[in-house]
Length: 408
Image (cartoon, rainbow, N blue to C red; front, side, top):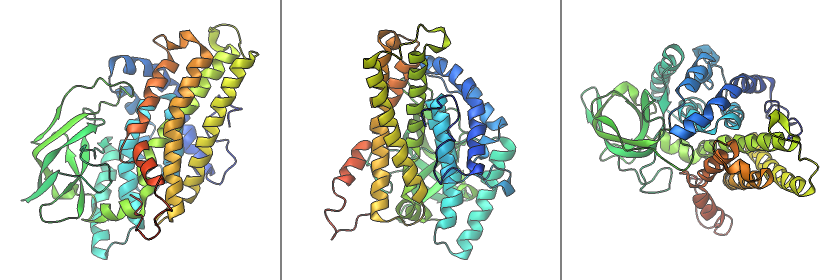
């Protein structure tokens, strides 16, 4: 894969690369150079990449995982993973925010289609997601997906946000931390509970609705352009039609389609590739940055280690993508956890080696490798499938067969 460091991510000999998916990756690759040029400013100023999102809209990529019949590009979960990888290669911050938007369309689309729902539930789902899709395609509506509350690591646990039924909808109260796109999204899709009902609800809070505010500053170590401030809901008004999934469907999705929780790792896999791109350019002497250093045996050793880390991460990720779907086996879920850990630990390791290979000047701002190192360090802590959570589950899997090993 690394033999062609200038081409988009479509050259891997694997069953997951179909012509349709490759075309979508090419579409994203065409935007990549512009995104890369803007990345340093958004990192320096911790500003949201608004122009990148305008470009994504103009390229039709906001509808990446919306069916062609509904005006989208018809991509599936695997297509999203490949496109996210390509985007992360050029601007990891934009890739993370793009995840929050696209994951919603996958959840109400491909994943919801795989769930066991009644005829009435399917009819309601179809009606409501049709409006969600129309807004994205026709109006460029941007969705975010702030789930974290900081109370528990589980995908279906620790939620204190409450939705109280009211005429015409709900009044939602709670706090969502690390709410990416907090100042850019038109709709914040949150998970919450209705008092007296243990089923998780998934509903969209309009950004301009009464009772919804954004609090705090955003000045993090890395991924500085995601604008992940705190979303505060104080009896925020949410209309009935913004409950995108039937009650309980989210619980079913979390346990039966757990691959949904590895989507952030695709952006970090792309970041690893971007680091390889930059390091290769340095070693070859491309771009007027100095003479070639590729004949230095010590630097060749570092370059070799970087390729090993990347190839391991990509190979495992692609194996998981080739088998992802509804109701995975215990071994398949284990591989998904392993994939997330391999990517999220591999990204900072590759970034560290890149700094080592490229020397002291690569640590001086503005430097892509310096920024990439900070960005890469953030991935391990991202819930619900943080490295810590995945390692804890991997440390138990297969050792307690008498226990129910729920994938979430």
